[in-house]
Length: 172
Ligand code: NI
Image (cartoon, rainbow, N blue to C red):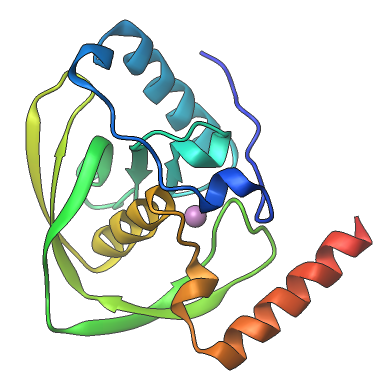
């Protein structure tokens, strides 16, 4: 297993539409990549990570929302995921992103989603998610489409976020 470097907002890979994983790509290499992604995510203390965030423009993502009541319930590695149903009910909650460290903002999203995907073995999975898990899945699927959370807030809030980001980058 290996830790990968997490790329930051401003890197063009985060703005690309990631490529689907083909049938022949399922196997040991994909499993190893998913393990690396979990390790990288835990090391950075994140709840989700998408392959573009480690510079790989492929439709692969991991999440672990670590529900203290059900420790394994919120852990998923998903390949070629897509949202098939979104609830009309929406909810605002605070979001951050490992590729935009130091920034957080309230983001409104559907409260519940159904996500179709394949697991790293190639099996089809359907996830019925609400609340934090639904939010994490939507955030990571956005990454696969080149969308970052500041794209999901009002133009005014976005300007403030980008200004703060620029300032943080200049301080480094
Ligand atoms: Ni993110």
